Length: 73
Image (cartoon, rainbow, N blue to C red; front, top):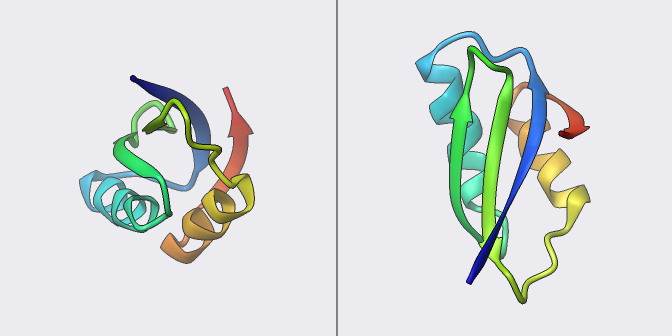
């Protein structure tokens, strides 16, 4: 079983942005999947239900991609 957490992300404007943030988030330990939507300004991160996702690592990954994590939605 898995859990999906939605985050608001500022600064994404195109498919390339989606790919960049997705690649950074996919490298975060425990992340099983990422779906970014530039038009909606959101990213859905999927993790195993028994895994605690480190929010600081999520924020760092989004920052590394060049965008701003606003928070959970």
